[in-house]
Image (tube, rainbow, N blue to C red; front, side):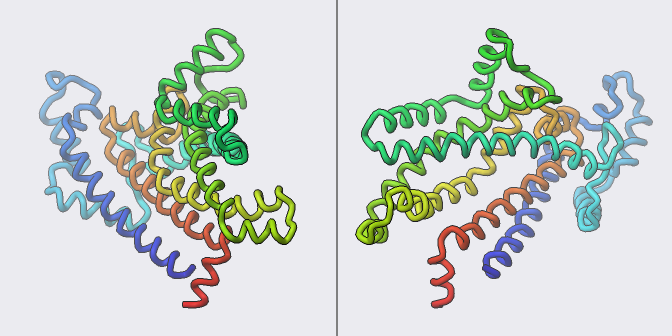
Amino acid sequence: MLFIIRKRLFQLFIVLLVLSIFTFTLMKLAPGDPVLTILNADEMLVTEEDQAKLRSDLGFDQPLYVQYGKWMLNLAQLDLGKSYMTGKPVWDELMERLQITIELTTFALFIMISIAIPLGVLAAINAGRWPDQVSRILALIGASIPNFWLGLILIYLFTFKLQILPSSGIGSYSHIILPAFTLGFTFAVVYARLLRAGLLQSMSEDFILAGRARGLKEWRILWIHAFRAAILPVITVFGLSIGSFLGGAVVVEILFSWPGLGSLAVEAIFNRDYPVIQGYVLLTGIFVVIVNLLVDLSYYVIDPRINRKEEAL
């Protein structure tokens, strides 16, 4: 376990280094002039003196390696700089929006689990019958419909037709239902099929046959023994696809006007607010590495055989 933690911490350092170089270079290669965007004026209405002064204040007149070195030095001191548009510290803006994004993703994960586990188990114990066919159809729909299209359908049905749920903004719990379901459903049906496949495989293993021979009840065999073995591939895939989950959160936040990290990043891209974009990318990279670390550590809790193998080594 300690080896896994050290490995992930080393990966975190590498990820941060690569992301810092990538995002810094990409921002400099992006079209447009952030100076003009900050001045909020057309190029013909801004004097060259104004541009030169602001460019000097932001350090844009220095070589790229000097700009990158100063930014990395500040990053080592946990200083992400200040937003070009608001003048607020980037860290404060990210933390303010992070709370709102965590609220959305938490509800989305709850919906995903609430759909994936019952649907996957039901499809596995009824393999080849109508519950399994329904699960297959839902998985096909979930894999085929993009998040934004599903969100538009939900807005049309529940906001414009039935008029029972709001389509944008935050405030009450009713505001989070549509965006959370949009984000959670597409992943839930896919994970349900993965769980079904894992259960069918684990139910044919020798330890399951041994449990039945000892007279264990079928529900205990399913939920305590087979489920623990079948859930490992699902958790692994979730760790690998966490980037897609966060990407889907960005689309959902824009669609439903949810003021989280995703909408902040899109606003920063349009405004060429480099410090905010770089801070968002680094924070996302850290989150992905941490989630994968938690996934690796969960193996030791779910499958005791991993501990025994390490002790044998």
